[in-house]
Structure formats: structure tokens, C-alpha cells
Image 1 (cartoon, helix red, strand yellow):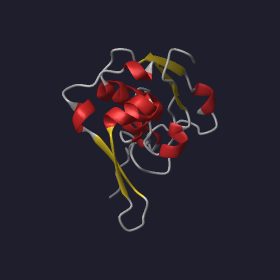
Image 2 (image 1 turned 180 degrees about the horizontal axis):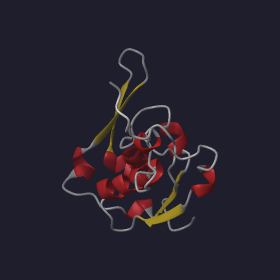
Image 3 (image 1 turned 30 degrees about the vertical axis):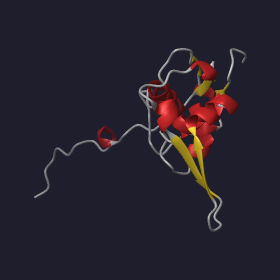
Length: 143
């Protein structure tokens, strides 16, 4: 026998934000990196870019905000990372491996160190490129 009292179907649905309204709801966040630890700064920026701080966060939608990071050259690294960390890249050809120490990358382009750190904290999926477009990093105080 069917029961007379069935739960409402609408009470079981998860509210999803309207995709049309998401760009209008984007806020702007400014982060001064002077004296901040690289990993903690990167997790904060990645959280804001993904929109995980919002109550209507949905992993399959791009609901994050804009993030501007200044003073990337003044970030703080814990331990001996400046000497011990290396960045690896490969051209695809035989013996095409390149290993660059973090100290050299910090001298040449400190914004790249912060960018790579934030990029690697965002899941590698179709939304990552869209989320990283809203990230701006400046080596100095200018913006």
C-alpha cells in the first residue's frame, strides 16, 4: 500500500546558484604578500579563486572571486626551501629536462613562484584555467 504522507520533492533538492548571476556576484580581494608564508598565502588565494568561502559553493561551477596579490618579492619561505626546492620542466625531447632552483626563479620573476604555488593548489580540471584568469600577481607594491 502506498502511504498517504510522502515527503515533498522540493525539500530534497540542493539549491544551485544561477550560472547567469555568478559573474555579477564576484568580489575583489587584495592580498599583500609582504612577510606572509608562501603556502598559507597560496591556500588563501586558491580558496578565494574557487569560491569555497561562499555559502553557495558548488565544485562544478566557477563561482570564485577576483584576487590581486602584491609584493610577491617579499614573501617568506619556511625552512631551507630557497636552497632546496627545484622546479622541473621537460621539453618532450630526449634529455630535454630542465631543473631550475627556486632561488633563481625568485631573483628573475617572484610572481611566477606565487603563481605556480596557487595553480598547483587548484584541482586540474576544466575550471582551473578560468579561475586562474582572475588572479593577478605583482612583484612590487604597484597594482
